[in-house]
Image 1: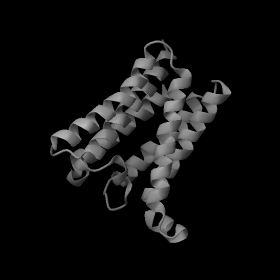
Image 2 (image 1 turned 30 degrees about the vertical axis):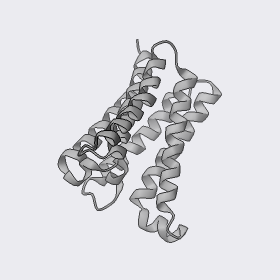
Image 3 (image 1 turned 90 degrees about the vertical axis):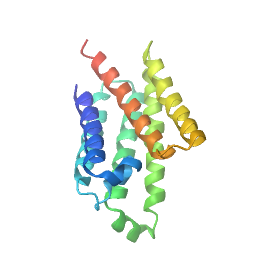
Length: 176
């Protein structure tokens, strides 16, 4: 149940940031981590909570799943830290915070997709397929039809929402 609460908290934080801080509506979730955003700390807290929930929830699973949950949690922590402390990270890495952030984000998504594929049973496979296919379809549609929504940020927000849906569904099945 901890993972469900962490995912819902993350989705609420993202939604509230987009409602309360208009410039974020057409930007990536990660843009909400910069200290210029008045509520950046809410996203940092929910990322930290999700990191802890990932490790605890998958602790009792097989070694592969446990390793992937740790990798996802570590990558998510680096993702948050690299943007929230971007000035400091740039200072010690000679301006590489964006590269570090992007690499950690990709590692996080791949770790969670790996976790999903290693634990998928029955209809969860459809959630994973939707989590991969729907963001790609949205990106293609937004690129083709030139809407006011930017393809990258909209796709990322959908992908995170679907990723959280899988984590919530998997977590809830433990209690049914």
